[in-house]
Amino acid sequence: MTDTVGIVIVSHSKDIAKGTADMVRQMVGSEVKVAFCGGNPDGGLGTSVSSIIDAINNAWSTKGVAILVDLGGAETNSEMAVEMLEPARRDLVVVCNAPIVEGAVMAATEAAGGSSLAQVKAVAEELSAD
Amino acid sequence: MSLQPETIRTLVKVAAEQVIASAPELTTLDQAIGDGDHGTNMKRGFEAVLGKLDAISAQPLDEALKMIGKTLVMTVGGASGPLYGSFFLAAGEALSHDRHLPDDLADVFGSGVNAVSARGRSQAGEKTMLDVLVPVLETLRMAAGQPDLIARVRTTAAEAVERTAPMQATKGRASFLGPRSVGHVDPGARSSCVLVQAVCASLEGQQ
Image (cartoon, rainbow over all chains, first blue to last red; front, top):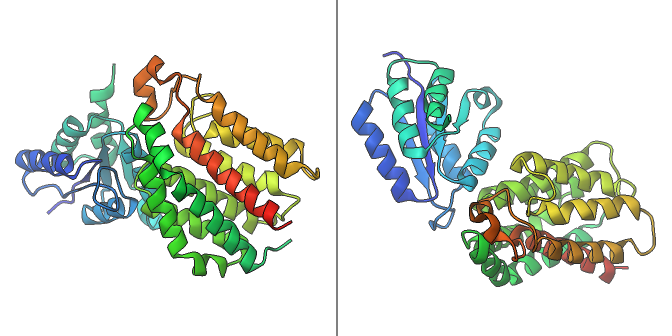
């Protein structure tokens, strides 16, 4: 099987992260590795760097991983998580500037076609273009 | 100057306890213009720091700062985790590279401030923690070596936090409120002030 870009969904809410992952799965089945996380280290609303690192590793692909986030802290914590990865993986993970649900579905659909990480990111980010 | 383990221990303990004690106030401020989690997030992070107090104070200061930073990154659970975490990681990193206290204090603190600015893609004037950290850095530079340095830093931090009230937020969750963010002190600026005041108080107690 050809490797495809992995997708990670990071929301403040575990329910939103899981629901988004469910929608992605409905589109792309198991062709694309999808991981999600939501909630702070105590389980309340928020995000957790260690959970994000785990999700990235769970969705790992040699073609890289695209992360979709909801609000500020999810983005900041995702960027921090990427920097804390082992050096060989760091450059193969991007945080997309895109709405989380639409971005995740678009990114995963693009990834399923075998596109590169840059292409996957660009397609997700078209949603944020004016 | 190399700080004794007992000095590091007292500094970290006082700072963490002050942040934890200020959690209700931070939450109230954050409920006004943010998502209301700053107090509980900072409390969680600094409780984790307290939990590692023995390990932290057994390290030289540069490694102690990095350990605090990493702990905050992993436990805070909001944007303030990477922001404060990056501050301590960068300050520790600066100290590891041929900087010495007290002569290079402003330089070391400045490395932390730059890391916050880069992490948050933010500058002073946007109603964030930088509106306390940047003025404190300026005082550290201007009053370096002066006998009243600590007192001046305390005054700077106290005044700077109040100046965030009339600002309109352009970064962070408060920016969603636009003009409605005016009139409230920024919770991140307040927590930075609490940390600065706690370190100053601890140092004054040891003079």
